[in-house]
Image (cartoon, rainbow, N blue to C red; front, side, top):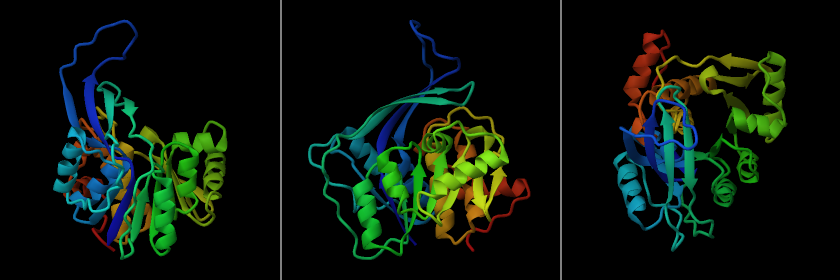
Length: 306
């Protein structure tokens, strides 16, 4: 199956600290990593590393970061024929501080310039489109041209651009932050409150499948008119950078293999959990065999394909 990942690509520079950062202090850093990152890019790399046929549709400048991104992504088996063409645009990059004590991260992103880009469309239809809301016009046009393609949205923040692509998505897999921003209230930890939030998000594109990721609390998804919880897999997390991106990449890979919705969520959850035990985003993507082995050790035997 052909998977087109449309959205953001960036270059990440991640440094680790093992304490909370407070103002007016100097910190000596002893560990850092550099690698590509961002939702569409990381999602494409999961699919490519696991043997699928992903294509990246993103802005990458003709600069040093861009060249490093293209090499690393191509090494994962990602096709770069449909990169967005925007002359003079520099590659997006991020400085990231990972708290090794809590597993959390803080991201300072320098986005690529928001100028009109030339989009090249394939002749043959994609089977699945994974999008993140960073290139809404291209995403919506892809869906218009290829109506049979299934669309997955990695909805991290509730911006109009994210809503724009969510309205044409078959699967809205969003963060807790997106859910709270869209509903206008703190997400309650009750079945009734979670169901109301899921139904609110489902109303963006009635009939779509919906899940809300909850970080260390796992996730909740809509099934048969009920809110169903899925606990997180317990790991010793040191860096959550890219975990959500990697979740969505694994989820999309599962769809491409014909797995059921809940199995795709399970696959995404374990993949993201393992990724948090390593520094960096794209560099922390585990092998498929490692993920399936970890699930099997817990008595969860997912098929590699349906």
